Image 1 (tube, one colour):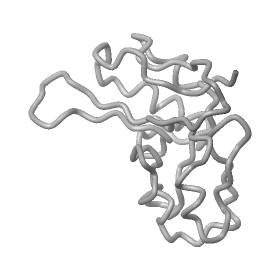
Image 2 (cartoon, one colour; image 1 turned 30 degrees about the vertical axis):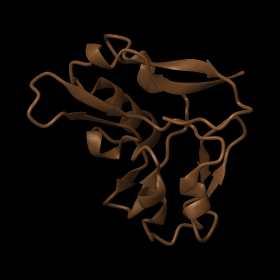
Image 3 (tube, helix red, strand yellow; image 1 turned 90 degrees about the vertical axis):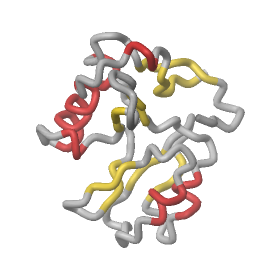
Image 4 (cartoon, helix red, strand yellow; image 1 turned 135 degrees about the vertical axis):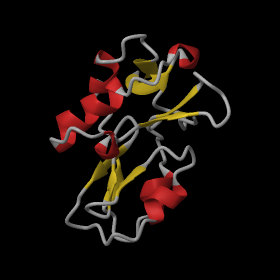
Length: 142
């Protein structure tokens, strides 16, 4: 079994963005939510209701299949590896992501690929997200 990032208690999200800041600081050395590989957004018209968009670590990721240069490649156990040297900034990977979880860095014009490291889970005050064991032999769907 492989551990992958999952939303386990969406209704407990308070929109504090701690998960996003943790990701941004850890992987991109930035103190902004714009550099996070996951997104927390307020549902339009619903006060206090939030949408959490993490990478689901697909076994056969559409984002990698859409990449014309193999800058994104499937990772053993789910998710993707990203090679920025191969990226041609085409945005096709983001458009192909079935869960709309792959984020785009507008500053570098490259995807912000999730590392499935779980650092975001350590900073969520309400345990909304967690690293959960999943069957790696089946395609992971959101």
